[in-house]
Amino acid sequence: MMKTLATIAIFSSLALAGCSKDNKTATKQDTAAIKKETKRADSHAPANAEPGSHEDWCGEHSVPESQCTRCNPGLVAAFKATGDWCDEHGLPESQCLKCNPELKIVRPPPSEPAKPQE
Image (cartoon, rainbow, N blue to C red; front, side, top):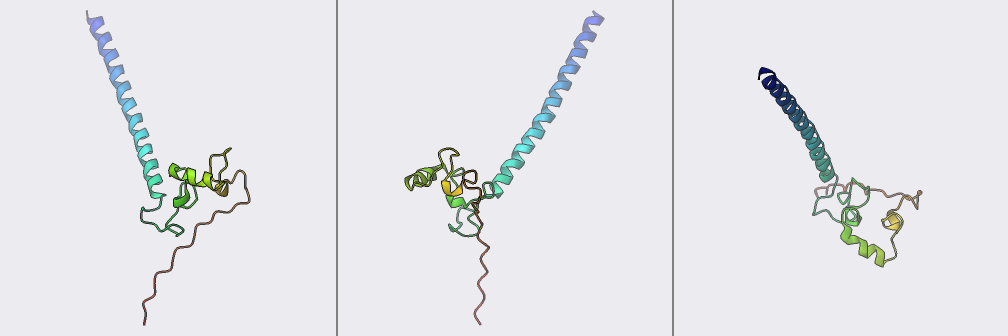
């Protein structure tokens, strides 16, 4: 009887130890996912950014946010309609660095704050 109780106690301890380890792993994974999502959110343009401005930038994909088909799949049809589409890579041809390695997509510089009139 004592052996049985001891065996149950050992297995229970191992099971609980295993559960707490899984919880620690899950917590690390959850933390990593939250950090990644926060970074992704920080790398996108604010909703009120003027298209073509410095603020209109998708930091995740290095293209203007207003033209980022990976973040805004609703834009794909417009690019396809104008013939600006790379079927092989699923991007606008004007953004496909694999087909056009010499292509440079440059973020506009920040606008200068308006100077007060004297």
